[in-house]
Length: 342
Image (cartoon, rainbow, N blue to C red):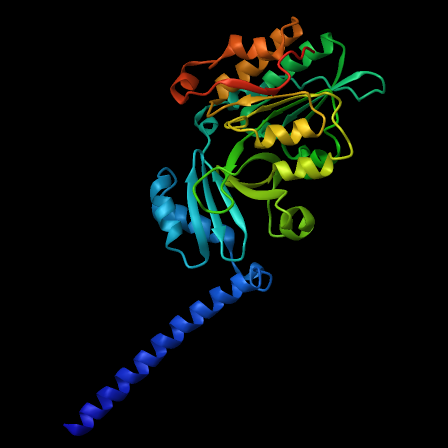
C-alpha cells in the first residue's frame, strides 16, 4: 500500500512539473517575442493560417464570434472590431485587417464585358487624370470608361490602371496628377487596440505574400503599409504615412483626389495626408456604400464636375446617393477647397 502511494505521489509530481514547464515555456516565448519586437519569431508565426483557421472554426459571416475567437489565440496580442474592419495584431507586431465590405454583396461580374477604357499617355503641359481600379476583376470597369469620356472631353489626358497594375510602386511615385480617382476598399485601422479608429487605410491591387514584409521592409516597419484581407484574398493597403513620406517633396498640383470606398472620408486621416502633399480637395464616402451606388455616383459626380459644378455643390446634390447609403447614414463628403472645379 505504501509503495502504491509513493508511486502515485511521484506520478503527480511529474505531471505537475510537466505542466509548469509547458506554461513557463509558452509564457517565456511570448515574453521574448514582445521584448525583441518580433524580429526572431516573425517568420515562425503563420499569420494567414491563424486567420483562416478562425474562419473555418467560426464561419465568415459572424464578426462578433470571430472577434472572440481571435482574442483566445496565444499568438494574437489583441483583436478589435472598428466599423467595417476586424483588426488583428499578432504578438510579433504584425497586423492583418479583415475588411467586411458591403461592396462584396453585389453581383457585378456582368459588367466585365464592357469595352476597355481608352488610354493615352501623359503629356507635358496638359492636365492629367489617373483612374485606378484595383478590383476590376470583381466589379468591371464600365464606370471608369464613362468617367474617362467626360474627362477627355474636358481636355484631360487619362491613364487607367486596373487590378495588379495598381501596385505599391505606382502609388509611391505616380500620383502627382491633376485628378486622382480610385475605386477600391478602405479599412479602419486600430493601431493600439483601444477599439477606436486611428487611421484610414486604402487597399491596392497588389497581393500580399510571404515576401511582402521583406520586399517593402522600410514601408512595413514604418507602418506605411499593412496587410488586409478582402474576401478570400490578402492585399497590400497603404496608410496616410505612405503619402506623407513619398509626397513631402513631390507635391500634387492642386489635385482633386476622389477615393471611392467605404469610410474613405470618415475622418481626416487620409484626407490630410493628400491635402498636406498639395492636393486641393479630397472626396469620399463618410461611411459604408455598395457597389452599384458607388459606381453610379462616381459617374454622376464627374458628369456634374464636367458640367462646371463645384465639388461642394456636387456633394450637396448627391448626398447619400441611394437607398442603401441612407440606411448606412453615408454621404459623399469632401475635405479641403469645396470651390474646386475641373
